[in-house]
Length: 104
Image (cartoon, rainbow, N blue to C red; front, side, top):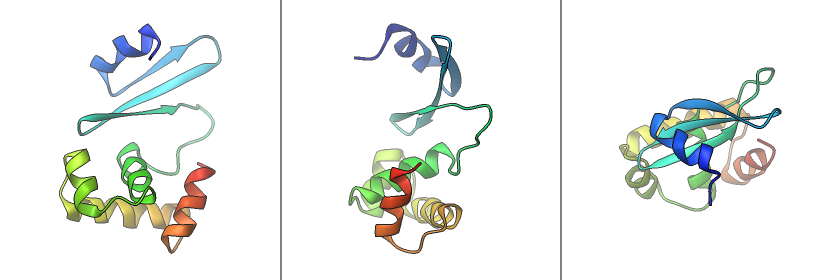
């Protein structure tokens, strides 16, 4: 279950919300899903939330068509997000992508 403050903030996504003194969460809509990531003032994410969502699903073995249906995108857009993710993470194949996402 999500903490009540996070569940209430989902309706206002995209947004950043503070949970306690040290934790900031970034909520981004991704089709019917919502990406929840730790927000940081000092460190910018290497991937945009939609790119990260597509890359995570692809790393789990999902096809371009499945990812497109899940995120409400076209397969061509998914391919573009994956191409951008590969470039941003400096990887050239799915195994390297999986390893890079673990350190994300």
